[in-house]
Length: 112
Length: 112
Image (cartoon, rainbow over all chains, first blue to last red; front, side, top):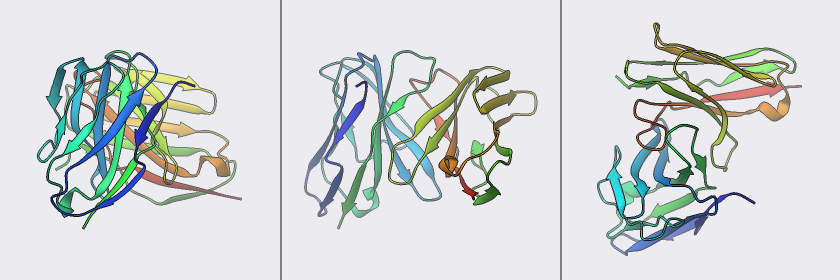
């Protein structure tokens, strides 16, 4: 089944403890992105990647890092999480510039 | 002012009604337009994708783009209780795989 997977799906952590949320797609898509979704603010793009080793900042990149060492994987790294990063995170991938991205199931992160 | 405005609802309609969902935007460079459906605790699911102006139909769903008015619409015919979800509009100037801007979503409830 063509899909985007994320792990973990739920995570509760404490301020300052480094964490990684993994994202993987099995559709051979070139493009991948990370979004966060917050009430009243909607989905906001954190980072996106056009190909292996090519990434760029979205609207809210502060406090996040990404890497794209393989085409299928695009992990999101929070080196020192803070409570304002408590949110619902989505990974997405797409084949080309046209056509809407396919979203993963989401990761609910709580930072205490 | 947000680049993309969307009435949050909730919008409640009886089963079988025609539903009209709308977004307005301020960036005249937007040329890729999408509608996503998001069920509670799930990732967004692409419903419709349109490039530039015009109409697109897919089953019970019709998407309209009026670039002169900076206004897009999604119509749902013969609405069903299973259509109850949050509907997100999204748009991009440079291609959907890169920078994508979302509306905050309209919550739709279709009642029996």
